[in-house]
Figure (tube, rainbow, N blue to C red):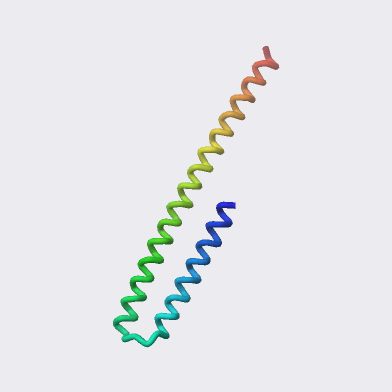
Length: 87
C-alpha cells in the first residue's frame, strides 16, 4: 500500500514539474527570468526526489528488520520443536 502511494506521489510530482516547466516556457517572461524559474523548479524537484528516496530507503530498512526478526523467531521456534521431538 505504501509503495503504491509512493509511486503515485512520485508520478504526480513529476507531472506537476513537467507542467510547471511547460507553463514557464510559454509564459511571457524574458529568457533570463524563465531560466531562473526553471532552475528553481528543477532544484525543488531534485530536493523532493532525494527526500522521497530517503523515505523509501528508511521504509525498506524497517521492512528488512521486521523480516529478519520474523526469520529469527521462526528459527528459534524450529530449534525448540526439534529439541522437543529429540528429547
